[in-house]
Image (cartoon, rainbow, N blue to C red):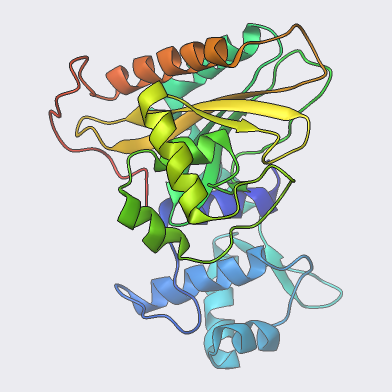
Length: 288
């Protein structure tokens, strides 16, 4: 995991940070410090104090104080030649702590490993953060074709099986509120482009118990996902398996669905979701 991926993973997973033009709550200094990290994360190159200040609508002295504090912790570093700032390697330790200590990740990893070991399935775990998904784990199969999705990488919800599985617990009005009435991003010729199409597909998926993405996110790739539920019955995460159409034996979608549903069910049970489906308590905060 690179430092860029680590800060994207750590900040996105723990916080939905308000930037310029939004109302900030809680500790103002903490919000501003995390907003600085977000600005650095979104930049492909090191940037200077004045540019960060412009992006966040703050004064350069205030930004400099925040950078000094973050640099003292190793979360940002300054390039010696340009004096500009970039994400520091200290964030990698934070991200690794989440991966090592998180119960969801710990429970799901052996299930993903087992799915990937079957043959040509690449297996993934993710959570929802507002209107996008976030990969937490990615386990590659022995397939010669690698489907790369790293921890900390964002995913679209409407075009991936994992993203759709994260949405199956939402009511229609909540989905419309999430996406609005406009067009959804078209990634391939088969991508769902309207919230209405997405809602219709989710209704079918609820009956099946699993979601699909057939050439909708990446041409030549099919994937199947299933939701993970916590003790309250709410969808708190999801898993998916994906494989390229051109590699390996012919795989039936229904068979993929049964495998991923069974794995998601075992993970849900470990996290407190009862076999009878009756809620028993509160869930940890994985979904936004």
